Image (tube, rainbow, N blue to C red; front, side, top):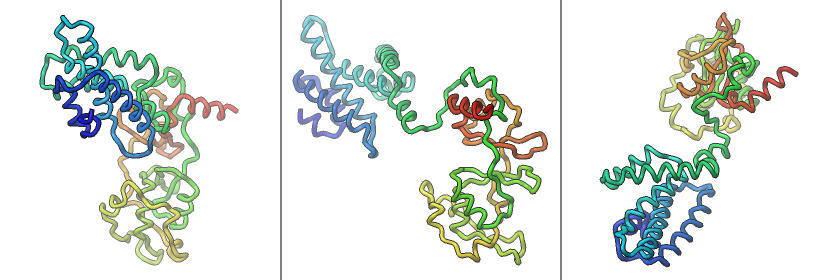
Amino acid sequence: MASIFFLDQKNAFRQVLWNSDSFGNRTLFLFSLVYFLLNTWAVGLSVPHGLLMPTILNGAVIGRLVGNLIGNWFPSKCVQPEMFALIGAASLLGGKSRMTISLTAVLIESTNNIVYAMPLMFTLMVSKWVGDWFGPGIYDSYIEIKGYPFLDWEPHPALYKFKAKQVMGHPVQTFSSRPLVKTVVDTLRKTTHNGFPIVTKSGVLQGLILRTQLLTLLKEKAFYSSVLVRNYYPSVTLESFIKDYPRYDSIENIILTQQEENMRMNLVPYMASNLFVMHQDASMKRLFVAFRSLGLRHLIIVDKHNVVVGIITRKDLFLQRLLEKVREADV
């Protein structure tokens, strides 16, 4: 019992998988019960920890226990508890993560024996079916709890009857290519948007700049005075943009003087100009495919004159939110 309770998980898994005579049924039952309860409790903690090795070890111990019981019930049969340990590890991990093909390849590579391919494939498929009968997998549950905008493989059929102009958010918060510093600061404080289109005076799209880029430019004080040459701007290197990743400063932590707020910023050198945009009459199915295949976070919607008329984010593609938007528009 000490060899699996107090060893690290990797070596404990080796003991369960290869040591044929060291573990009795009481030891395996006690460990599997305690470890399962601890694993279930630790999953919900907001601390960095893994699910892979605890699940594999717990499943291996349960599988080994089943193998020992079958060997005791049928002594005339040549039962290999080690084989049951491998199948138990695969079944518990497959039921929790719902992985099939990739997990089969990983376990075959780890055992270096193609003989286990068919038992592992059958076990993982059954564990997935049983798990799907009870509910979604652990990672799907995390996505739902955290509210991450994760899109399915195929769009919902109800999306087919909508167009971009029915779903897009408008009016869009935009910037000119050389805005006042005060305008940028006030906009960042009032909104939580991640991307801001840059437009001309007539509203024609020029590019897109991210919130994190604006925060870096404000922090580096990349301003110029109106009395200076308009194309002048301090050199802000790539290292300046990535040194604070992923925890950028909040706009509340950036202190500027009144003189600095009356200066201007040149956003042209930092904006993204090669954007993927769509017309306002584009179908939602086409939008969904674009978001899913290109991994977009937001998409700018334009009219036939390339004037910005709206913006769509990944969250807007969820059916419930989409229907709420359309209902509000009808009202």
